[in-house]
Image 1 (cartoon, rainbow, N blue to C red):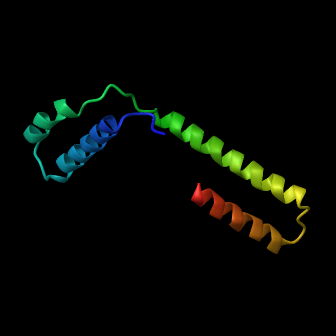
Image 2: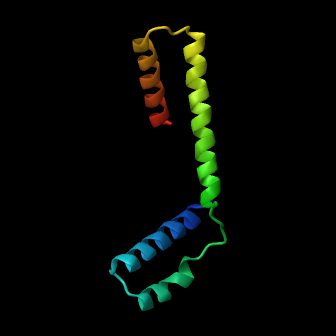
Image 3: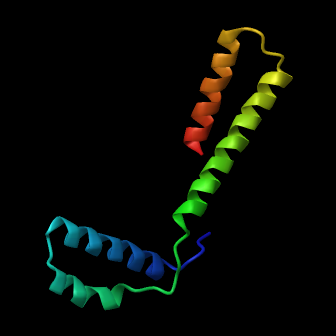
Length: 95
């Protein structure tokens, strides 16, 4: 299920590529100026500060879930706690 159409996503990716090409010197500013009007979309990006807050909130949720599992399982040994943390890290990486 996509939130936006494939055309909009393709336009966003193409705009990013064009900016990267300009910064790396593959195209000059005049070429980018000709490309840019066709690569605009009516979408807004999320603020970097909000992204950082959401990332931190996600980390707190993951840590709380791992802590709940450790407390519920009544973990006393450090090797068992390490196994729970490794399993949680693998699950978080898959997500």
